[in-house]
Length: 130
Image: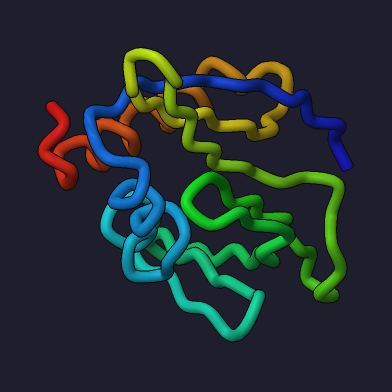
């Protein structure tokens, strides 16, 4: 299995943290911008894009602040890879941003960041944060 590299990317988002959290933590919220469809059974989430399906386990969450999904393999075991969506709010300015921590093959990091930019653009349209 190829070793992937971790990267972080941050997007300013004009939204309340509470509203944003609904879009990053629920299957219905995630299916509006992250994947074509998202199903969940307990802590297990299935992300569907076109004909491809990926499964992840909700590894941790802090209400109103962050969610972390750990990818699971075909045997249902956790992999070393995850993605985390973390809402940051500046104490003074109250500016809100979304920090994304993810992994990609070394030669695909730029492409992966571009994909996140497209998805976050969709999220901003949903939130009226354009």
